Length: 64
Image (cartoon, rainbow, N blue to C red; front, side):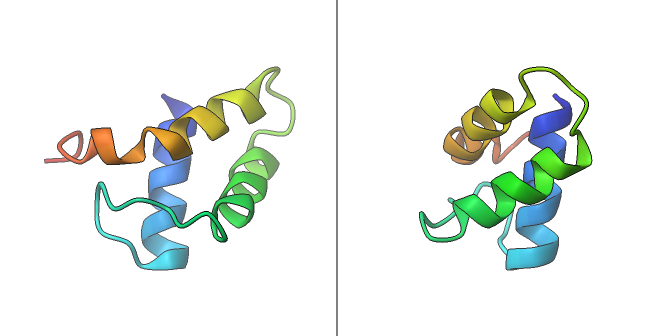
């Protein structure tokens, strides 16, 4: 859940994407590094962030 919120917030604030819009392959590493940097001490966070980036479109209604 923390990874989802971080990825979605970064996508909105940094990339100006609307909720549920996919993150382009060239932008994914930027979002991944930023989100992981915020949770550097959480074990397994990189896997969670990568999953969150891939599943972002499916969360389009999560914030409605």
